Length: 112
Length: 145
Image 1 (cartoon, chains in turn yellow, purple):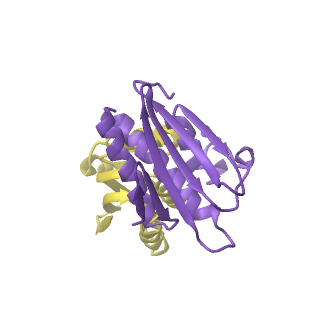
Image 2 (tube, rainbow over the protein chains, first blue to last red):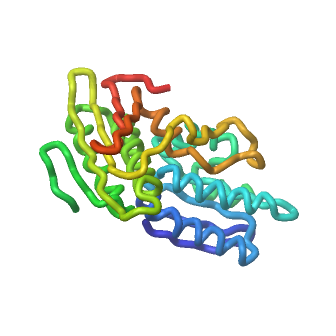
């Protein structure tokens, strides 16, 4: 798994590639929580180049989402560029009701 | 890596070996004729099952092995994940409320929940001598929903 972060004017774009599983999810969670602790509350997570996500990865994203939504005023963590297999995992555990999904970063960044 | 035993792979129950097991079974599923979506679901189920072994099976004791094996049958693929750890009661694992709003969401039980959703049959057996086994079946053209 590889993670790149890019600060935009109104949000941070976190681009992940590779496999998000039990072994790699803690690193993703650390990056996301690090951004939140540093004051960022609007985050785009780009999953375009992620080929696999397990429940550990889903939990890392949910944990970060809960934290940004608790900010005053609340922030958001949105997903961009997700493929059908990955999206189905979100749907199976009902996370499609909790996250907003965008086709690409342009639309996701524009949502903030 | 561990020993390859025919269609079985015995590995130390550590996180680095979870994708090894999951991708090994996924390759077999692809070869058996499953489509991309089913292969992904099988890889997900094996990953979750093995991650649970690593996280829970040997808690408080020396880390042992996990053995993953598969059999292609006429109807589909049978995958077995065996460990020799503590055992657990599947009925006592949290079942996530997937309709709950964000503020009421718990983080437990998602892995096993996903396994049950993507595979057609899921069964546990526990034996202190022979080991604990999770048997999962994915049918060709099966509908897991």
